[in-house]
Amino acid sequence: GRHIPKGAVIFYREQTWKQTPNETMAKEILELSSGEEITLSVADPSIFNSNGGSTIGDDFNRAGLYFKAADNERKSGWVQYRSRFRPSETAAPPMLYLFDNLSYMIQTIASAPIDKKKAEDLDTQCEDHGLDAGRYLLMENLLVQTAYFTPPVHATKGVIHIQSLIDKHRADRNRTKI
Image 1 (cartoon, rainbow, N blue to C red):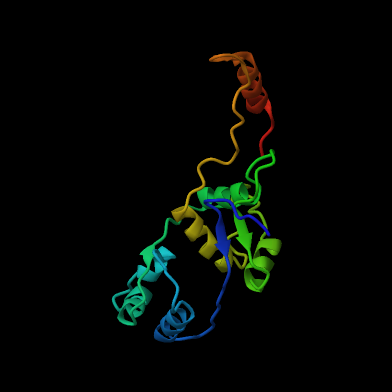
Image 2: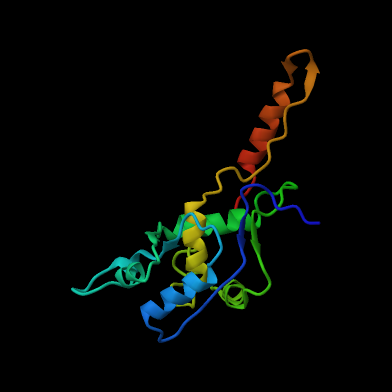
């Protein structure tokens, strides 16, 4: 069987709506999540914006569905995606897995264009809602270490070949990073 590494994030279900009342969306989310142990739900901070009336977040709360405003920092979020899909140039396994039934998210990932003015961001005019939802979750579950550490070689009792560590550090520092 496949081994999923500790700390990996797994996207296993998606749901999309068009022109659907907030209360209906909340009810469907609660039904889909019935029986699951959900410890944290995050959403686009804009669902809490009010133009003088009830917010989408308020409507969800009334239905019994509670979200935390997500960290909406785009650049760091895309770094999380890239780091998880390709954790390092070593033999480290991916830290993000998608079930193949996620047709909307997979299509969105495959077709997302890079912003011509900001290469570290996606073009915000593209269809990016699925990617944004994933980005919000990844920003709550930050991947800090993206490469496995290879312990230094021991020459004799308690003596470490420090030069091999220095050489590795210099090579990593001088390597072109994308």
